[in-house]
Image 1: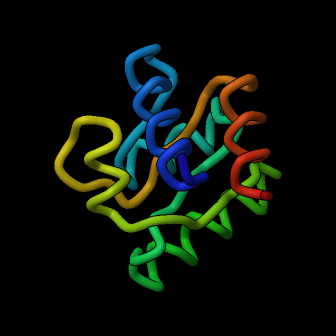
Image 2 (image 1 turned 135 degrees about the horizontal axis):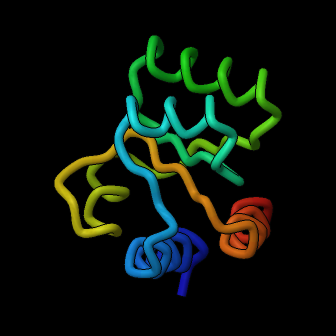
Length: 102
């Protein structure tokens, strides 16, 4: 199984565990409240959205990774499309970071 498929199935598991925040505005609000361990941004996010989320994550020192596209991220968590996904759980965030750094 490729790392991309492992990542997407892990995101689905996070969703079922109730450890995700999805959607740009909800993710930004969770970043401000410092509720997230990590943010995943779709590779095809607009430059404005990308800058906004990366700047907020940089300010609050939350790691942000860019991967896949909005359709694959949405499908992985059982939604239509998602540009930004926030992960609350520290354990899930560490496992996803390890997958993304390989």
